[in-house]
Amino acid sequence: MAYTSEWLEENTQLTARTYPGMGHAMSRTEMVDVSAFLRHYVLR
Image 1: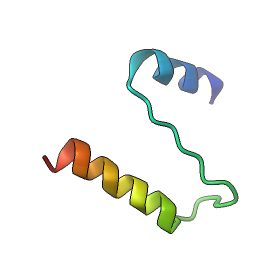
Image 2: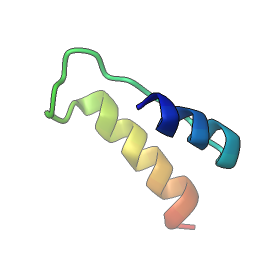
Image 3: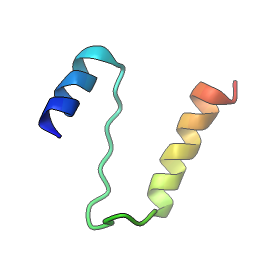
């Protein structure tokens, strides 16, 4: 994970988010972030 994180920082416009305690579940907060990403970058 450290290598990937470093690579992303150097090679992309990374906006990193963490959602503590979720495991592999989806939270409302995460879905709001995904929705904002899609509206900004995909659904132009």
